[in-house]
Amino acid sequence: MAKTLFTVPIPPLGPHPGGSITVTEPQPAVYLLTFLSPPDNRLTTAVCKALLTALDLLEFGGHAPGVVITTSGIPKFYSNGLDLQHAVDTPGFWALFYSVWNRLLTFPMPTLALLNGHTYAGGLMLAMAHDYRLAPSPKGFLCLNEVLFGAPLQPPMASLFRAKLPSNAIFRKVALEGHRFTGQEAVDNGIADGLCAGGLDDALKFIAERNLLEKPKAGVYGTIKAEIYKDLVRELKGAGLEAENERYKNDQRTEAERKEFGKVFAEQWLKENKSKL
Image (cartoon, rainbow, N blue to C red; front, side, top):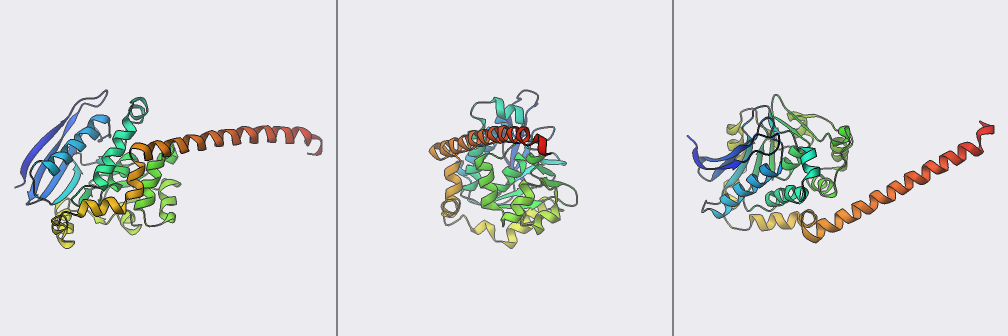
């Protein structure tokens, strides 16, 4: 039976009732973070802070190097993404959200997202920040549906998928088509590394097959990850994040000017050529 190590509370926040992240050890040095924030594990400020706390406790709380698995205590959802209104209205939310990615991207142990249900939008971003992903099977979809509800990808979001997806063609399918990937499609397209029809047993088998428990023991796992993703990590915090945000704002201003000019041009052209039409 899995040993419970600790539980991090997720306090209530607005319409979200709160919940918890329970960390267990189903086998030696395998750490299972099960997050529960009904009804669908929206990634609010409270959830992000709880995730960071759980990761800090694993790294600095005297636990042996091992493998970290994250999964959901809600069978239907790994995460249904952000509470977008909360994200927009809360100062500092984006920096906090990106800091969770940064923590996973540089964490000194292998990280595995066990996607036991639907994984949408910000939930898929969280999963992509892990080293490995096991996709839901037979039910559950992976989808970046921002293009369908009118939310542009911020620079760090695009950079995350650019760093993690195997090709621009897959990136196009993910970001510009908003394709809903079944678990098998996610594996076939290089988004996930396997299926989790058997839940935790599949994750433990995956860890054993790749001998992942041995990887962090030499003490350089996180350093190697940080170097692999150095350009992405630079964009997630401090001056790098500020520079990308400013570049993005400038691009948006330029685009607004282009549209305004185009509208004036079209109106003038139609007026001058009305008699010829």
